[in-house]
Image (cartoon, rainbow, N blue to C red; front, side, top):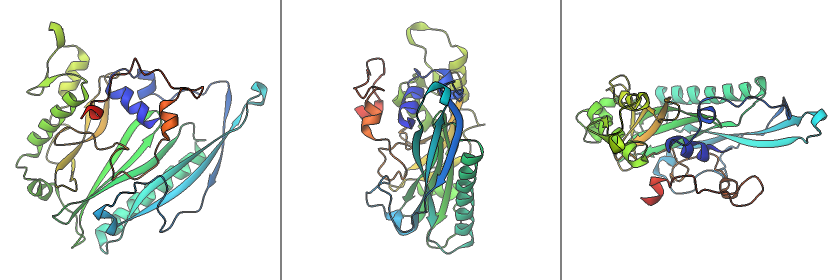
Length: 313
């Protein structure tokens, strides 16, 4: 799994179109035959790969895990050896007694079970799994971001907001009021502008791209500006609250990588929240040695990769 690397490459515009937009076609080195083994579900036991920091939301959310082992059979003609890969599907189970909580649990659990069936049916050409981020604000609003991600594609997000006291669904108007936001669209536009500038994809001012060195606005830059359109940023977009009561957003943005639009999760300051450094992020984590080393087990050459702006912050 190279989720972090794929994301970094995409947002810094050095990711190739083939890597970020299309699945890699099977090569002649291995046969697309995968055996599927589902391990027992972990009940009441925190995964070693899950976030371990204290989270107030844990009182209302139980971490459920499906562990899956994939065995890729090599083509005998190539003399290859069988390869194994393990993945985990983390998903939240709300410990709230209400019809809406039951609806969330059913929808999320159903999505995970579908992914597991698809793994077996489609021979799992690529790694993919699920994770989630739970936030509990002082306004008794529990915001859960359920994330589905794959090795070569960008993430899919689903945000659920529920009142932990009443068990009722929390609408966008209440989210905005709790965050002190009077205009959701305007707040989202400001947040997205901050995100572009923080990520150094392009420079944006007044929601317009500012070309460097007098360059002309090209089609990709125009797509960046389309990211600010009401089609993507509006009162009905997916939003929620962090534990500190700050509003966050999910919207489709142009990353300048092949001029494609992908969903991104970011807060009002323009910080990306779907990050394994997020202490409330629950899911598999890439071992550091795999993230930092090359194929030969030696340190990879990162000279061509720009620094992550989040690291500097």
